[in-house]
Length: 358
Image (cartoon, rainbow, N blue to C red):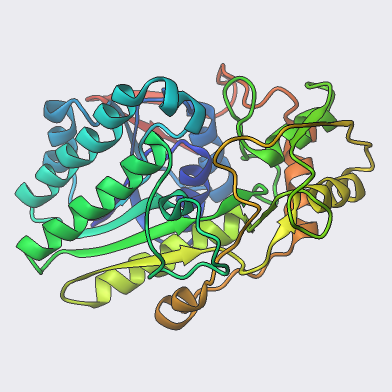
């Protein structure tokens, strides 16, 4: 029996694939590579020494996705696939609603047809909107403020309705705060397309000389140094949270729960810059601009529920997050090599699937 990982070539997906394989799970990966690289999956095989099956397809292509369920014995799904850029979602809301929501509906229809009712869903702390109450608990008022966040919130509601209609569904909704860092090997990490939307890859690209300087949006917040405070979590801790959630839903006969995955600690933008300078030995040039609309002064998680119900908590601190981010960026200044080295491990096509062999 295998775990189907949608969007498994992405930043969070690839790190979760590593941890699944390390835990002895068989995995099947689905990805259309619209904002990810096949090279990441080759390196997953390199890190773990294990092969797995990959289907290059879009979740909106129901016929091709159904072939995955027909050809594999799937016991659970970890669902990462989706567009994720907040700014782009504001410019192209219909694209985000069509891809993220419709793709999830297609997936759930096939899960239902093939009696696969264990699902871990990749949600986001953006579903909390502009709350001023920190640390944020899972029962806080929900209200996303951009189309990307609203797709996550709508999918959460769809999954609750699905469970209400059939209570044998086992669903874990994981609300991420701010994933940063990279695998300790430096072989996989965050490789954003174009100008990074998130703080850490922007800082690391300034450090490696790819970008000139970091723009800090607002230094007049009511915080200790005037810059915004966020909850940053190491990507490996986040990946391990998915393993714990998977174990949880496989043990029970039905249910749906949301869990915050964060550290419960907040760091300001200025503190993050200082920590990265310490880790890298580089000076990060910065400039100050006005606040961005919709940015809260402070946002960090209350992760107590995940600790109590999933037996999970983050263990890696801010220094390790920055060290691992810098190791990845320093070793991969332009991100993933797009062309697979033919003298290394090469993908072999077979019936729409790719098998990576070590």
